[in-house]
Image 1 (cartoon, rainbow, N blue to C red):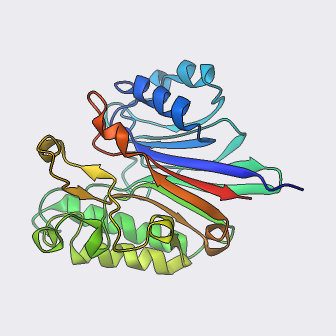
Image 2: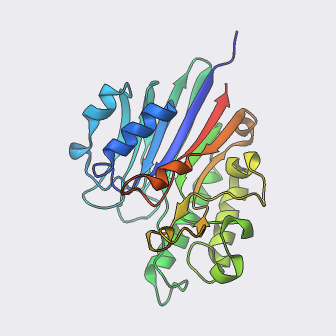
Length: 267
């Protein structure tokens, strides 16, 4: 039997309703089988279901809320929603997990939007930073219980490696690249032996960015950070055959500050 290829994309869209034409363009041009969106910023009732339906993405799991956060997994292959973890412990819509139905069995796909964590890397002075570390700790406890081959993707809001930012020394005290966050994400990685697919396919220290600030991008300086990730269980990572960053979306009119990632699997 010929192997089946499954392509999975992730993208922090920074408002799905505002950028639905860009999402439609991306799906038309890139043709992923599954797309995980973060920061959809809408309740499920207002999610633009009809656009996805017309494009053939007839399966959706939407965990939204009004105006903030929110995640959605849309697919042209059957999916079944599994869970919505409240790793923020305050009811915010930051996770949805699905099972992607493939001929050889289900693939578990977790879609997560980790909090940004505010501006000051001190939980005492900035409760948002403490919430981010606590979120990662809850994720880590969960990761230790994962038994099936799983793919977790999304906006992790952490650039873990020195080469994952444009200037390590300048950013070591900036939230998203601090030692505390890097250590917390490392503990999450170790809890299940996750394989970082972005660095499997684009080895360090090769350039690998997924986010550029609205404040600096217009300067044409490549001040990027790798905040978006696709991590897989070892058995599933062995089946990843290709990975790409769709950087051209960052140059579209009124874009998201994040760009999509796409990984292909030979199942």
